[in-house]
Every structure is written in structure tokens, then in C-alpha cells.
Image (cartoon, rainbow, N blue to C red; front, side, top):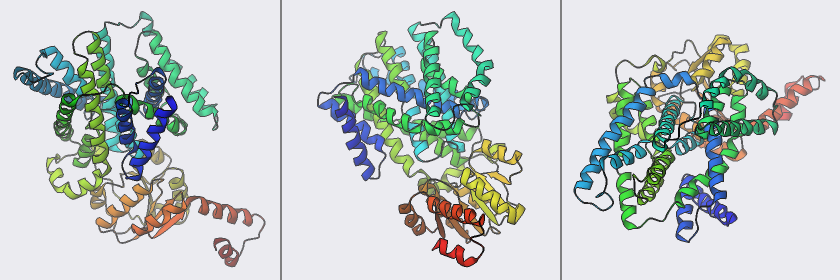
Length: 533
């Protein structure tokens, strides 16, 4: 039976991939189809899903800066959104109960507030999945979304404590001892090497944190997140996150299947779920207004609001607890599951074209931004730049170092990760913070003296989008990009990239040239040309 569940997930996921749609929509649909055919959720699949969520929260912690959670754009926005949403939606539900609509007629004010609270959460799984697929985890809007999700997760944990009456053990105070133990955990990570021991170390940390917190009466998911935070900032934290990526993605397929297998809805439940889906514009609008009020730029506000515009798996947990203590009828759990599924589909489809939507309507969207942006959002400046390297990972940093030996201060590096740029600047790199997919950035950046833009990015979608933004901003210089695979070269050329370097082919060529120089076998241009032929 477990194999059949995975087989259906594969078939539906692959089918939606062929349609150029996110595979997670296929996984959700597979769950509902299997449910209709009589399949049910089981312990194995649930464990599969829980494993994925635990690993995901651990990897979020690896990239989290706790200080960021206290910033107004995260803490104030998150709490304000929850309060306003719960108040507004509760009022709507009470009104519906007065009109005697089925499933709403017996709702009390408390029940209405619980349903509104369940729908106030945005999905950590959905948001992280989409951000990672689009390569935007480290962007400004990506970090803000993750910060708000963490605050919401903390609110969910507090709700579970008060709703279930399950007070943490007195031994939970001992968890504060983990703070001075962080250097020891980081030392263990340093000794884990680069092979299979690295992801194994990550799994031990993630599940060790989970079970340790459960042992003292605190939700285990929070433990996985905290252990990730303790390792954040380590030189290998990014490598560890990447080593766990495939594990996380694989196990999360189980999560999407379990939503569809929760229960089979009838027509009325489906219509009510669709009704809650129609409330998503309110959620989006509320986030957008709050973001702009704390002086985020219009584009950041728009993208962060769009990615947060869904319902959450934590809403299902809140619903399940409310059902177990008799505050909600069990039919509401089905409605919550259906609404969550529909919201995933909406977010996946809308965010896929989010940058195009913004570019088309940016003049309207920008009307809502404040005149004085936050210090972090002030556009950088380029002074006498001739070459700009976009993406300061290993490839970009290597290209920057080589070029700076020849061009000196006329080479600039740019990356969307502010923390990475700060580290580079401390090491005397000429680096600026910037999201290459932001058309507003290119329109406000002085690039008239830039002769070459090098896109050192692993995603051809990102390189294609940035090429479009550059050309739309009037850039007339040359653009170079890298491709990991041969079939990625032609699509990039068609988008307007002047030169595409096949990552592995060019690395092999450089390896051959420099190795032959050691034996004086390549000291003529003719020999070099033969190697490149």
C-alpha cells in the first residue's frame, strides 16, 4: 500500500511538472484521488510527513538570525496581522451563524475565533518549498516571510500549551543550557567532514532536538528549529542545509499526501472550503498594508504578501486540538484541510509569475510605498564599475577574485543575501546588496558605465529573469551566465545572454590549461586554442 501511495505521488507530480506547474499541486491531488478510492492515512505515511517537517524546521533554523525576529517588519507585522485577521474573520463567521447557514449555525464566538485563528497561519511547508524552488530563501522578502512564519509557529506552540493544559516540565528550564553548549555542537559539525557523515550529523541534531524538547513537555518541532538556530552562522551551515535538501523534499511529499487523505469532503464542505479560499485576497491585502506601513518597499511588500497568502498545516493542528476538546465539530477539520489544499494551489500558481505581475503593475503597486524606506532597503551605488558579478557564491566569488586582479576597484559583486555581503565587505570585497530580479533596483542603479554583467547563478530561471530586467532597464552592455547542463545553454542564449559558460566543461578546460602550464606544455596561444576546440 505504501508503494502505491508513492507511485501516485510520482505520477501526479510528474504530470504537473510536464504541464509546467508546481509538482506539489500534483501531490495534493494524488492524496484526494487516493482518498476517493478508499485509501486512508497510516502511521508510516504520517511518520514520513512528520520527518519532512522536522528536517524542514531544522534547515530554517540554520538560516535564521534571531535578531531579525525583533524587527518591526517581522514582529509587529506578524502580531498585528494575527490580531486583525482573527477579529475580522470571527465577526464574519458570527454573522454567518446568525443567518443559519449549515456548518456555521452552531458556531459560538469561541468556536468562530478558533477557526479564524486556525486560518491566520501561513504554511511553512508551502512557503519554504516555493522559495527554495525559486532560489529566493535569502532574498529580502524571503527572509521576512521566514521570520513571520517562525513567529506564527511560536504562537501555535503557545496555543497548544494553553488549549491542551499540557504545561512543560520543570526540567524544560534546563533547555537554556543549550545556549552555552552551542560551541560544542558547532565543533561537532566542523568535524563531520563533507561526505555522508555531514547529513547524518544534521539528522542527529534535528531529531535529537525534537526528542529532547518532547521529553520535557515542549513541542518537538520547536526543538528542531532551535537546534538549527544554535548552528546558524557556522561556516558549514549552508553546506549542511544543502546536504539535507533532498531528504526534506522527499519526506515532505508525504505531508502533501496526508492532507488529501485527511477525510473525504461532501459538496457542502467543498463549497465552504472554496469560500474560505476566496478570503485569501483579504489576507494578502492585510499583509501588504502592514508591510508598507512599516516602510518596506512596494516590491518587497508585494512578494512577501503573495508568498504568505495561504493557509497552514498548523491550522490543521489547531483544528484537531479544538475538535479533541469539544470546541469544534470534526467536519471543520475536513473544511480546514480542503481550504489549505486550495490555498497551496493558489499560491503556487500566482507566485510562479509574481515577478512578471509586479513588472506589469509596478507603478500601481509603488503608490502604496512610503517615501522614506528602511535603511536596509536603500538602493546601493556603483562607483566606476565596469564589471558586475551577480551571485557571490563559490563561482561568483572566484570570478570576482580573478577579475579584481586585473581591473581592481572597477569590479563589483552583488548578492541578495545581506549577511553574506557583510562578510565579503569585511574581507575587502567590493560587494553590494541587491536582488537581481528586482526591476526597481536596475532602474535606480547607475549601470551606464558597466560593460559586463556576469550572472554566477545556479538557476537558469533566475538568470533569464535578470537578463529580462537588465534589458528592460535599458542596459546595453554584455551579459554572461553559467549553465550546469548542456541543455540549459540554448534557452539562456535565446533570452539574450551573450555568452553562456557550461560549468563543468569550462572547469575542465581551466583545469587542463593550468595543469599543462606546470610542465610548460602550454605556452602558446595555438595550444590553448586546440584545448578549446
